[in-house]
Image (cartoon, rainbow, N blue to C red; front, side, top):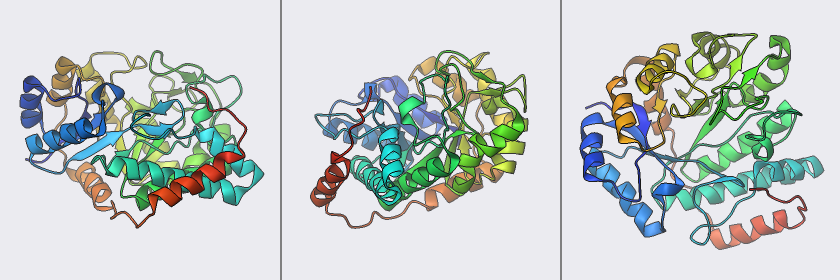
Length: 342
């Protein structure tokens, strides 16, 4: 059976009998792991092994492991990593050092993930924050100019790929101007199209060839006054696929977030109709998971081609001396005075 066009979560640290039956029948493209699913390395390995055994294939396993406030794997079992703004501060002092640190930090994250069987990290961000915006992006961002953000995001993506982990470019076509947290409310951005093209959208353009991307639950009134990017065919076709030129497999941001309206079924159908290749559903609510699955077809056509191309692009990790790399990374950050919030 070809995988269905969605990524699912599960409720806890082990897959229940009901979830096992659901996964076997629904055949999701992938699984996303959250803090609620994590106790220790052996448990995470067992959870992922069980997921693969149920599906009978080496399906994608995703996580949000950015560093700073967004880090699902945490001490004491895994290292803490800095927020994206730390790389931005280093870059402003010394661009070469900032890029080197960003790449190495991502390479170390990839080593942590690969050891668990996690194959996809929802990173990097190319969001460009502005004064007055909600802090949901905040210090997760790599800077406040398109060139700097794109350069550091590219270094992060390269570090993940060198470690055999696929990057996910987010949040297309930009979440930095949002004045609300889309986890709770629908952000509306009233900035003119010309400004967006020169700033927010420009940060994503150099990254258009990355294998996977994630949409933003944000309304851009200059483009589509009624719909957020996730469910807007105008924004996906004209901006994400058109102006930005993103060619990878496009997933929605989490459909259970408060920014979206309507039932989970309606949200799923709208996102797919707008041009998302994959639906992302994260909260582990089995009834909602069943609703998503019932409204997501088997992957076919361009969506199937893009997801296959993404998976095929995952490389064998390059050789690395982890102890030496971690020591080098610590030295790079040693002079960084900015505190990491979260």
